[in-house]
Length: 447
Length: 189
Image (cartoon, rainbow over all chains, first blue to last red; front, side):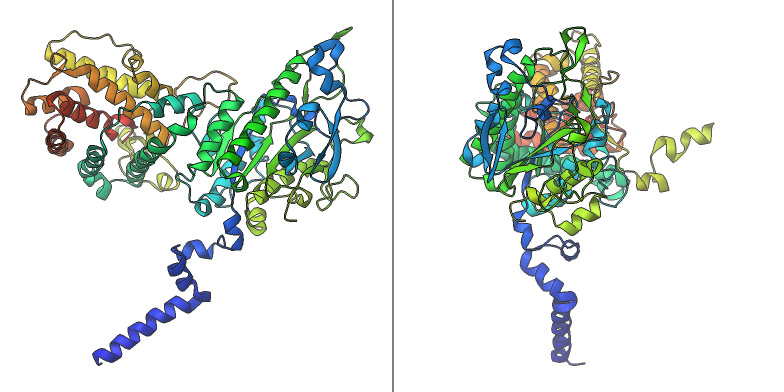
C-alpha cells in the first residue's frame, strides 16, 4: 500500500471518528470535554444556566414555617406585643407586600426585604414526613428518594446537585463546601469548616514560597512513586486525593482571604458572607450552611426568640443577596432553605395558663427559594380540613392548593426536584436521580 | 487464627473483591491521630537527642502552640456525643484539611528545629535527616522509603538554601515536608 493511500485512509478514519455518533468526537474536540461526558447528556444549552446552590438546613428545625406568607389564617399563633414586647408588632399584625406579582401578607421582616429580592423569592408549604431531629440526613435525601450517581442508595440533595452542576460550573472542587452542619457525599461524611476557622487559616501566611512549594510536591511524588505505580487502588486514590487537596489549598490561599475580611464569627451573617465569596471564586458548586430562625423552640413561651432570630435570619438572606449582587454573581446562584421538619403552628400550653413555644410538626414545614431562576410567590398552603395545621397538596403548574396533582406527602421530594431544576439540572436527569414527586413549575421563572 | 490475621481483610495489603467495591480503605488522620503522631515523634526525637522529654498527652500540647491552634481547628476530631449530628468522620482529604496540616507542621518545625532545639541547625545535614526520618517519622534506615525521603530532603534543603533561606529555615522546610507526608497524615497507608 502506498504511503499516500495509507495517509488518506488514516485521514478518513480520523474524519469518520469525529463525525460518528452524532459528531460526538468533533463536539468533544471543539468543546474540550470528553466524549463520555457528552454522552451522559449533560451538555445542552441549559448547561450554561447551571447555578451554584447555597443550601441552608438545620436539624434543630427552626420555626421558619410559622411566619411566612400563607400562615396568617385562623388558628395560627404568632408572637404578640403583649407577650414578647414591641419587637413582635410586625409579627402580631402581618404586613402586606408582593412576591413577584403575587400579593401576600406575612411577618414584617419578610416584607422589609428589598423589591429585587422579593421578585425572585418563593415559599413552598411542604411536609417533611418526620418529626425527629435524627432524620436530618434522611430528609436531605428525601428518605432515599434521591439516588446516588449509580441509581442506588441515598444521596443528599446538596451533594446530588453538586454532582450534576460542578463540571458545568467549573468549580475548584466538585464536592459541596460545608460551613456548618452535617453533610455526606456519596455516603461518605464530609468535613466542615466554620467561616472564622477558614478566615483565620487563610490569614496565616506561613506557607512555603511558591517555588519551594512546587518542588515539595514534585519530591513527594518521587518519594511515593513506587506506591503510585504498584500500590493498591485505595493507596493510589489516597495519594491522588492528597495531591488534589494540596493544589486546591494553594488556589484558595491565594484568593479567598480578601473576601472574608468582615467575617467575625460563625453566625448566619458570617456564613452567608463566606458563601458568597466561595461562589464568586468558584470554589465549590454547593455551599452548605445553617441559618438560625428561632431554634428548637419548645420552651420559647413568648416566642421572643423566634421573633429575634427570624429578623436575624431574614437579614442574613438580605446580606447574602446583597453580597452576591455586589460581586455580580447573583444570576449564577440559588439560595434554598429546607429544615428537617417544621414547628407546630397552634397555641400550646406547658401547664394550665403557661404558654409553650412550638413543638415538632411533621405535617408542615417551609421551603424557601431565592434566585434569578425563581419566580416570586407562594406554592401550596395550609389545609383548613386539618384546622390549618398541615400543608395541602400542590398543583405543579399553578402552585395552588386547588386541583393538586402533588399530594401533601410528596411536597418535600417535589420541592427538592424544584431546587435541582432551579440549579439548571435537566428534567430528565432530575427524574433519573429523584424518585416520586414533580417539579413545582410555579416556582420557576422560566416555566 | 494466624491465617485470618494475615488475610487481606485484616492487613488490606492486597485488594479483595469487597475492597474493590468500597470507596475508601485509607483514611486521613483526624486531629487526635495526627497530633498524637507528632507527640510520639517529638518524644522520640527528645529521647535520642538528650533533650527535655515532653509528656505524652495525645498531642494536645503540640497542637495548642501558635499557629497549630488554627490548623487544628479545621481538622475533624473524634469526639462522639450520643445524639449529636453523626458519629461518622470524614475519611477523605480536602483543601481546608490540607491547609490545617500544613499550619501545624510549620509551627512544629518552628518549635523543634532551631539552633538549640531538638533538630539543631549546627548538626551535619545527614545527621539531621537521619534524626527526622528515624526518630520523628519512625522510618528506619533499612525501610524502602528511607532512601527516597533522604534524597528528597537533601534536594529540598539545597533548593531552599539556593532560594536564600538560612540553615535553620531550610531544615524547617525538610521537617515540615516529612511532617506532611502520607506516612503521618494517613491512616492505613
